[in-house]
Length: 143
Image (cartoon, helix red, strand yellow):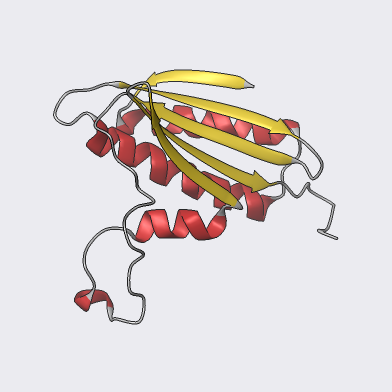
């Protein structure tokens, strides 16, 4: 498992994506899966940067572990900001037109749909959001 401790600020998103991307490079992750992971990482990190500590700045820890058969990436996002379970919010009503829907929730909805597992816990004063995604390697097919 590798870990990145970083200030939870939107301008640090490229460093977070680079950190996760370097691990995906090591296992030759397929482009489609990589894109899904990068979108989820961006959504989660930007939410931490935008809401966890506002108006002050705080830190975030991103842990990445690649293991198992099938090969799986597990990413944990940890912050000491306000307790917040993004999974508790109801999914947006996609049957309504864009202007008729309530704002917010679409990013975490997309994250939930694109990851194989997602879990939240608040433990020891920390928000911990864990995402898991089975990795398909370049040149390999699933099944």
